[in-house]
Amino acid sequence: QVQPVESGGGLVQAGGSLRLSCAASGSIFSLNAMGWYRQAPGTQRKLVASITNGGGSNLVDSVKGRFTISRDNAKNTVYLQMNSLKPEDTAVYYCNTVPLLLPNSWGQGTQVTVSS
Image (cartoon, rainbow, N blue to C red; front, top):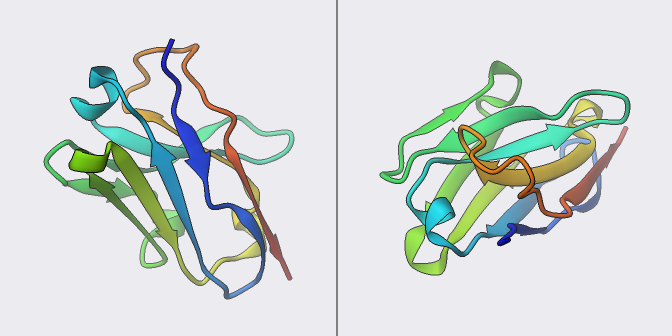
């Protein structure tokens, strides 16, 4: 089963920036809305940003004004530009369809750690 491949995470100081990438080949990913989810230790995985196949985006309030989601359909890639990072953004970030269509299709995720 095809799984997304996330990359671009790392350790950054508060106020810094990171750009995450998600390579997601397969029609189920290219034909559907995609999103970035994150999971902090001891918490459930939550959707933070989503983008339709046509480019319409939506972000949760806690990241509005700081994060931007985009996609390049020709490259089967979804991006998450994260600016003004805060320690509470620390989590493993995953991408997948929105809504989740294949519950067992999660990739390995990419760790984002923001130090204060």
